[in-house]
Length: 363
Image (cartoon, rainbow, N blue to C red; front, top):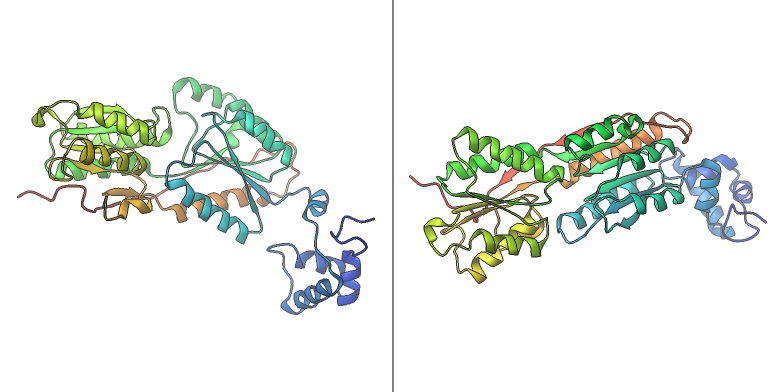
């Protein structure tokens, strides 16, 4: 009995014999990204078809100790930004000969699901919209499984920083983000340029690096101009939270006491906020209030919203993520146990896209 082919009795050796090539040539033909000539590939594929041979990825992984699977861990899919990430990441990984294994975690910290993931012998892990503890990061490093945070960096609070610093293998975790700080700065410059006086901020998750950096860049520019955020509410990156926060932010019946501009920490919340502003409160966008988001999801360009927002380049972020994983999985060619790959932190440039949700320049 053999596990080399799914059809009993058909082995890679038989395919090689019929095709008159080496057994290693058969292996390379069915290994994505491996070097093999077109002529050899064609002979192998013809022989495999005639014999009914199919390569067994599980058997190959037992030999190579690589599963060619990448785990993607997410805590939610409500945000329209992340379906784009899944699509682009899956396509890019498939081009590199890898497949995506997706896990949904209900926890802000995904230690429970990661313990399960490690049982699948994945070659790498991408963490998106979720986090993991320093202890679990150390476990991943000890198993030689590189971790890349997508659109997140580890908790930046002083207490957590000291824990991560004390756990050196955990420092092997890498990250890819857009330049959230600069994005927040661009929004502040725009709203000041358009002569807004009562500028509000609708926050996402308080401790998430995306929210912290966007708000920090936004506030730095406002403070330099002698302006203080007029109102601040928290939407926790959810549509329901954003609607509740918008109602609270605009609860004052006096139009002159309401914000005249709102920077919302992502488009998902901005779209929900716009619905409340127009449909519940009867306000006009941008005549009564300007709204700016962050992400540039496809819905932001819809005629119903035409949302001014900050674009995160999904393509560039995905490319950087896959490149980091490839370097850490294959670059050093070391055994999987005890492997602590060096950490890297990449920021991808973002840009402001102006549509019709911000009022025009006044003379």
